[in-house]
Length: 443
Image (cartoon, rainbow, N blue to C red; front, side, top):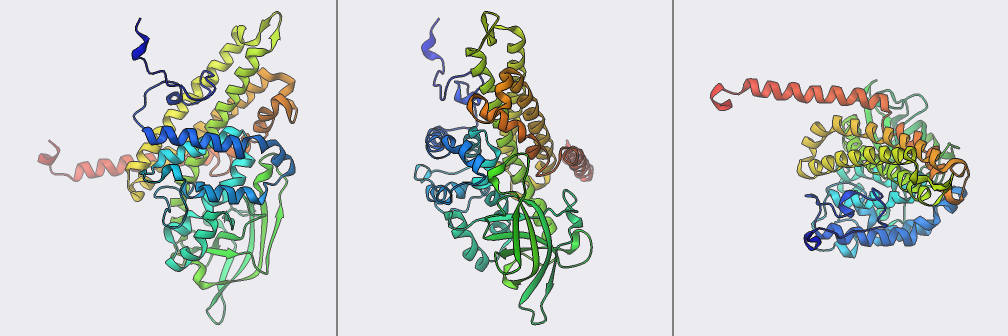
């Protein structure tokens, strides 16, 4: 057998299914040489600056301020904002200079960061920026962009997205936080509350959904609210994602310059909806790597732990567990790659229309796969998975963080319903367009 013709360029630890298939000698149409070099570079940076510190940062419930500046200096924040990337406002990594940056470069960045096995760290270092800055980028005035974007991308300032309220989560149209024009017309006066806001405890800016008009979706606006008098934040104690700074925010007669309005007044509902595809795709990438990490940690342990005179992996029931985890993770990864490819190829409006339902369903697929893998990995590691720190550190932490992925960004129930409704709408539109075409044009 001539093995010289086989593609054997492996990357990573070499554990079966411990990395995506194109890391392990499989062919893929999605990646080129720039992706291969970027993968190596970003893994080295993550293993140098992030992964060794996860447990310490999580236990302290805070990431050191200098880490944000390091990430900004490396140019990673620019790639976290979604395609097209704001290269005119922020640095890009030296290794990507001269490269046509695409969605797969961002995919690799999020995937490699998520190898840390900590939702708190992933959300802590980029969660607020990933969802809080794009509305400014896409819909803000030039003056607002010039003022807000550069310091956020550099890591000097932090921004977060403030939409969810105590009485309004997935039903965004029901938000109550109000913004009323001052008598002089120069300010909005903001009053209300926001809850479960990632990075809010440290944020300098709050991209905030406020009610400026009538009830429902047609009365919502977006404001960039700076941390000024009347803005109060307090940490929320949650089951997991400790160092991401989950926050309860109170706005009490906060004066916000009218120049901080994003886009047009009462038009923010569509801005919010257009932001969700990228947010949910990022959650998909992150969550599926968490599932893969659970599988990999279980396999490593199964290769060294002995019971009844055999290593765990020699027991068929353990191999079955690992195979099930691998099967689900690989299938989900392929779905994410398809979404990334289409997001790269489509115009923004087309992607929002065609990919919204699919991304919603993929998010459910990812979180259910993650929940399954977290449970099965815990069964393989036994008592070690119930102990903070040590060999079972990642599995213990990820088990606590399953709900943090399954609920934010749209709960599984909402996503399932949205997915079917959206795809049904697309199918009806396609059928109508076909019916409206002349018979000759269809032949």
